[in-house]
Image (cartoon, rainbow, N blue to C red; front, side, top):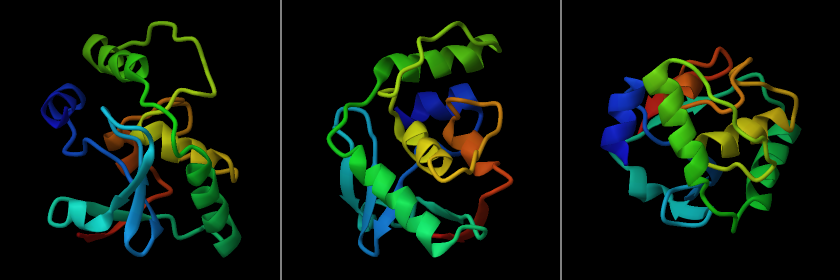
Length: 142
């Protein structure tokens, strides 16, 4: 799905995963349930962003939030809704749900759980919108 996401959002970013352990990320990805993936999967194709303002406690709580969503299913309806938002330039109503989970909402919601809204005014951000967050700074490429 990377090609269509890149084209629709006009962003080089098509996926978000968060470091949960030195060797593992947690991600929500199409055709899989939310879970762990080895960091080597993204070697040579990933940029690393960091929120410097987080306390150690907040970092732990963010990862715990993401861990609590392991085993949840990818929300294809939300994915297509986001595509429509970008293609049409506007949002159509979407029934809000605690279960709406794609790669970006997993991490946006994890940060919201500690009081940080990475993309104010955007309930369901895209990877590019998260990369442009004032809270996140690119620190490296992997």
